[in-house]
Length: 240
Image 1 (cartoon, rainbow, N blue to C red):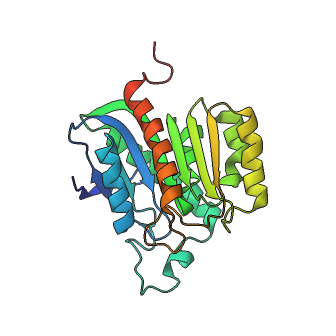
Image 2: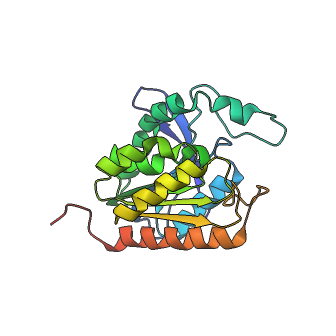
């Protein structure tokens, strides 16, 4: 079932664009999708539809609405990379957008009390920040960039959320110190899993990307479904 374009009112006042997909049942956990620098393009819309097909209330956010809204296209040159700088400042700014997306989902009649954030590339850090700062029950990152910036925060304050981080071992945006740091955290955090795909480059989850890899996609999606099914079947963390 295809989703629909919506407007979300930001905590600062203005509205921004988002794409909402609802499950046939109308009920389930709320999942915020944080896209790559290309924005809410066809691939992100299709993925959000798949989340709805898996029983989730899913919304993909335009994280660049303040300065350069909308998805980028093949003829846009370096627009995507330019609008994502300065990276850490923008990631921090976007935490408010993730919070606004979660608030929107929590206001829907079918929301079951459980939430998750899923991030691609640029949006990867929100898999961590959704848990550490916004109380999400789960976070999933596919070839996330700058996720390692928040490893200390994850180590200290994951709040018991299930976190799943996925990279290819040839991902230029996840250098050795990132993957090594993730492996160290994985060894001591029972609620974290880190999956590294041999011979795989950055962007393997995006069918339109040169690095697209069906096998790695399937493994990542299978783990995603395990986590999301848990959010449908288990009580909210901290509930009696």
